[in-house]
Image (tube, rainbow, N blue to C red; front, side, top):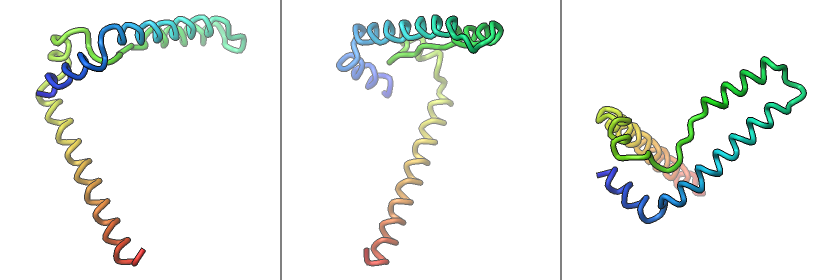
Length: 110
């Protein structure tokens, strides 16, 4: 169900044209970084090469994968269950802390 909701959201609020604009922006930034690294006077050629190598490995992920098949391959049921369980635990922890904080505030008369 989560993927279906995500698809509806994307269709309404993040159409392909928006994604294309953001991808263009990010690719322009990466090209600028590449040029900037080459022009740095304080970096040795070896360090520049390492920086360029690191920059080339930079993965661009904007909005959503290219296809539903990508989503299915990238997420296993176990990973989804794990993320859901972690989110529930975090939510319960926050709720307990808020309840504890409000009780201690009420007890102090603040």
